[in-house]
Length: 239
Ligand code: GLP
Image (tube, rainbow, N blue to C red; front, top):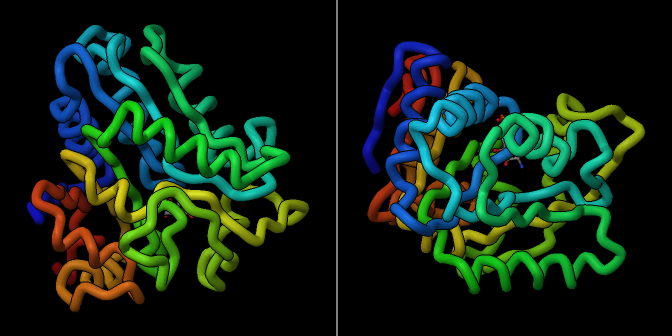
């Protein structure tokens, strides 16, 4: 793991966007960004680079990382809504193709298979940008999600349920998440995990200084050969 400690959120966002752009191979590529609060700045910087012609995504495909089962693109706070609002609608040049998980699909298992097929056809991911949950989850790979899983549907952990209403109103009560699996994340050519704020310090330290264990999903990244952790000073305090 290569640790990059940044002086603040803005510096973290810029560095992560630069690493993401650098990881896109010329003439092709598959990339994935997370939802949540952490990546807002990074996505803003990425959009700027594309719109200013500093990054070429014309041959790059984009796949979303995860989604709340039961929420769709029209539901404010869903991951699909996040992708459309902060990324896709802001880009003046488009990706070659996008695959955004539909958490409202009538057949959610077919949706899961569709995610697997897309990654199998166009993958492995060249760049996987990830946030980290308070329990160490990556996407919705909650505690004890098998490290050998591809895309899967999983009950949300108590920790995730506690924090989820910062994204959407309590009328939504999702019970499950659909997510890329650890196997697909670990197959990515470059992983960029971003974290900011003192509240992420403990879980970052557990993930990268503790043992590799399914109880802390992000700890699997210790075994990734090309993983960057880009964190602000507060989040990196225990690393
Ligand atoms: C969410 C998402 C993750 C995200 C994480 C951290 O529940 N499933 O993909 O990375 O939790 O979110 P935040 O950046 O808001 O702390």
